[in-house]
Amino acid sequence: EDQVTQSPEALRLQEGESSSLNCSYTVSGLRGLFWYRQDPGKGPEFLFTLYSAGEEKEKERLKATLTKKESFLHITAPKPEDSATYLCAADMYSGGGADGLTFGKGTHLIIQP
Amino acid sequence: DGGITQSPKYLFRKEGQNVTLSCEQNLNHDAMYWYRQDPGQGLRLIYYSQIVNDFQKGDIAEGYSVSREKKESFPLTVTSAQKNPTAFYLCASSIQLTANSPLHFGNGTRLTVT
Image 1 (cartoon, each protein chain N blue to C red):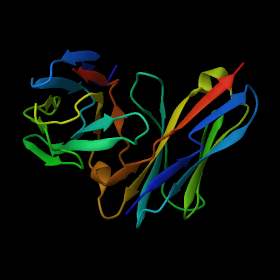
Image 2: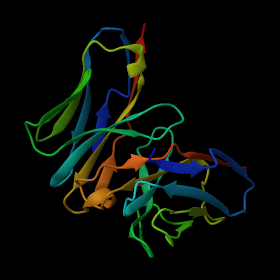
Image 3: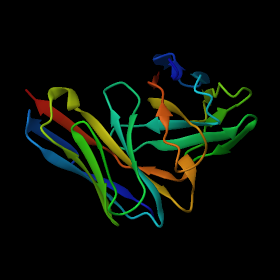
């Protein structure tokens, strides 16, 4: 069964303390790996799409990387406004499009001032 | 500003009643989706639609129904047959039903059934 596992479930950091969130996948034939940010009581907001191993994408303090088995979301010198739940989702060849998307449960990130 | 509007934000219903959640988008996207989010679980797909007058069941369609009469609108009805309807419901859209089209989400409707 195709699975997407995010770790840790929750992470508390001090402002400026860099860290990484992990998204491991066992999907058969990856078409794309997506990262989203979700604030409490709101819908997820798209951050990145990665398609092939070795690919990297950056946006402000966030950098997403992809290997054949996992993706990392690196957060450099985070600020309190980076506090949110970060979701990853894997799109499989067998599905195609959002009907083939498998979401992880998310990492709840808290950045303390 | 273009986006997806879900209404209402909070909805309360008695058990046994059907309820319809609204989703409207002005992004001119062809594809629309409904997801359910429960604590401690990943998003789960209920229904999706690639084009007007066409929709497909997702992973957890039982107890739900949808319509797609207009490109902009994709309402979800939670019927009395849904055994655990209390959840956070998210509507999304994308340019097309492909891996190159990331989802754009609305801000959700929190449904409570007692």
